[in-house]
Length: 440
Image (tube, rainbow, N blue to C red; front, side, top):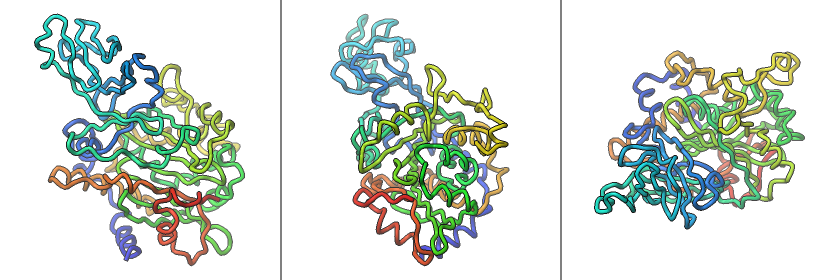
């Protein structure tokens, strides 16, 4: 039954392009939009906890889904996420004072707590109850501050993606600005076919891949055959490459609705993951996570990640913008492209991806694209997001709200050519936290 559905889906959609109506739904996530309403029904990663580490420390500007917000930690250690602007005259609270359990506006002294309640109006105390500001509830999990930005009575359980449940020693999390719409960035994370090309030489050089047999299979076979299984949490993508004489190498990746992806590990190295969150219609926050569910990351691994290697990046000073960016052509090295040190001449997994995704423009012209069989996962993702956004507008509850369904893993595995990878994944990756790590 599943095989039949996948085949019919492929026949129908291989050459399907996104039309204007679908584009309008998918690409805009501001308040009141169909996609914005959908995404606000899930816990949103906003910033790392250590960005606001100290009680009464400096507040931080954060833009999420076209909303300009301010994050801070109050005197008691509670995290607040409030509108950046004071309700009185619209001054930015970034210039306010974080003191005594609230942010006090530096212009006229109005003070707001983590719930957005105005607790003091020095010139007119009697109107404080009318001067409240927008605020979103927050939790901290996995070293990340998560916010819920949807209807208060619809708040789901906190996220249970595996890396968010591990000790700090077992994970490394970073975020970066990507200067394009979230959808084309996330589609790059879902598309595993590109690994055989743009990352072709990076896998040989990066310490997180050294010694992995998967490197050879990825480089030897660029003709990836895809199967897809729609799941309670999103979808599982099965990318098949030739393995040894009697095996296939299956790269099993996970898309957890609406914005998580999980990447298979290479050898005994850490697993990977991403989160793609709209900043506005033309930019997004790209989160990168490495984690090992069974052991702490080594000092060497952590130093490698902290230096902006692997799926992480080096930043421009004082920002989350990558040092290699569109203004300097991502530091492209044509000599390295010629002598096969970098397939595109750009170095670093995430910068390689960003250079190509941003090259499409801030918002890709989807009507001009011509899709291929390797784009099955991208087409299905678009349809899932589109249908869920329109469904919510009609009163249908969104999918994948059950955080318990997020307990899955990605895998890289050699299977006998007669083995059904879907059946294998259901046995070994469903509730993957109970199972070994599968990687070659």
